[in-house]
Amino acid sequence: MSRKVLLFVILAYLLGLPGISTAQDTVFAGRKNKIGFTTGSGFQYIGQLIGGNSHAIALHTTYYYRVTFYQLQYYCALSRKHNFDIDLLFQPQYNLTKYKQFDTVTNFMHAHEFGLNAGVLIRKNIALDTWSFYLCLSTGPHYASGTPHRQANGFLFSNSLFAGVNLKLYKSLYADFHTGIRHISNAKFKYPNGGINAITINEGLMVVL
Image 1 (cartoon, rainbow, N blue to C red):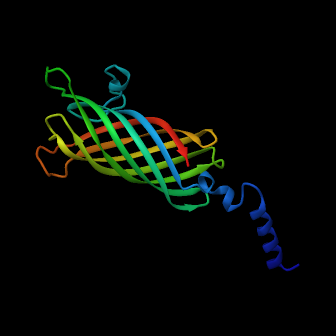
Image 2: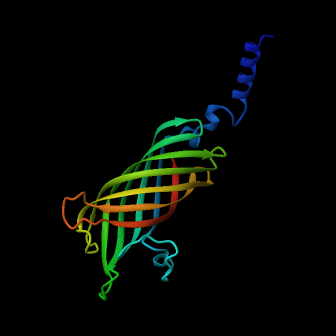
Image 3: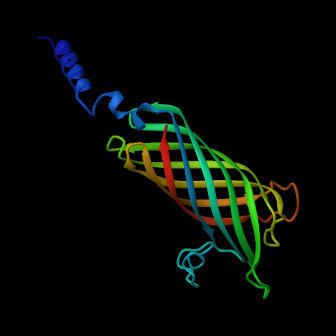
């Protein structure tokens, strides 16, 4: 048997093994659409999240801006290659906020945000469809009814970079956890435009359709 024929036989055998074929490796068994819901928090230092004054994990800011996220998520697969895929992600959301400047004695102000983020998500699938890691960059228009003095309220852009994991719970149901950084500002449409930054942590569920 020639080397070429032997190589062809070995390759054909490997491609026929369960879990090695392209069909087995395709993320979420080749299904294109997913929907989900997440909730979480955005904060400047870890003490805001746990109810203390710890600045062990913190951004260097002069303001307090705590946001609670309520986000719907729709994913549409754009490209697939073995254990990787690229999704287009849409995140309509309604968020509650409270804020103040550190150097003031006023009470916390309360406000809300709503808007839509759209982004590109790159995913690496692990152990067939049991769990996967992803990285996402998104942006989109938002409205904020109130903000710290450094940032004009009203129309804003929300820009986010986050990394996360999906873990299979049951059939097409997955847990979703991600953390990252968010920046909101208005691209100099209105002053002041100092921007507001936050560390973000979200958790939720995702269903593969």
